[in-house]
Image 1 (cartoon, rainbow, N blue to C red):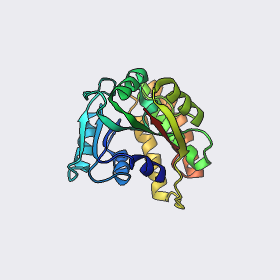
Image 2: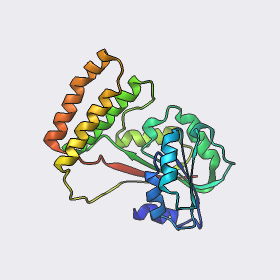
Image 3: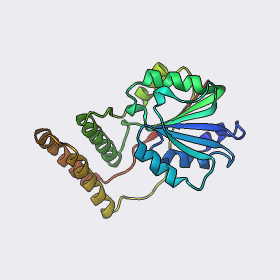
Length: 238
C-alpha cells in the first residue's frame, strides 16, 4: 500500500469520497493510508449497506455514509481531494454520467483512486473467485440488477481511458503475500455461498439451467481451493 500512502500524503487533512462503498471495506484501507484528520464520506445506492457501514465506523467522527446515486452527486464542484471507487467498475450501469460527476467534484490536482479485480492471469485457486463472482453477476442479471463480469487488466485501462477525464498516472497489482490455504471450513462456506446465490433465482426453469453451472463451480472450488483474484490499483489525476 506504499504507493497509495505516498499519493495520499500530498494532501493535508484530505477530503475523500468513496463511491460504491458497500459496508465500508475500502474505507478501512483508506484510513490506514491517510492521517486521522482526513474526512471520508462513503456513498452507495443500497441503504442496507450504508447502515452496515455507519455501524461499523460509528466511533470514527471523520467517517460518514450516505445513500446517494453516484450519477447525481449532492456535492459542490471541486469539493474533494481524493475520490475512490473499489471493485465497482463492473457494477456501473451509467459510467459516463458517473465519471462526469467525479470530474466535477474533484479538485484540480486531486486524484481518482481505482481498485478493480481482474479476470486474467489468475491461478486455478484464484479462478474460483472469478467463477464465483461471475456466477453472482448471472444471478443479479436474472433478477434485473445490473452486474457485468469483471474485466482483464487491459479492459480496465481501456474503460478508464474511455470514461474518465482524469489522466492515468500509475497502475500496479495489489501484491498480497498470504501463505494461507483455504481451510475445509472455508471451502464449505464457499460451496454454501453458491447454493445461496442459486436460491435467489425465482424462475424454476432458469434455476435448473444455472444449477449445472453451479455444480461446475463447486467442483472447481473443491479441486483447486480458493484465493482472491488479483486486484489492480490505478491512480488518475485531474
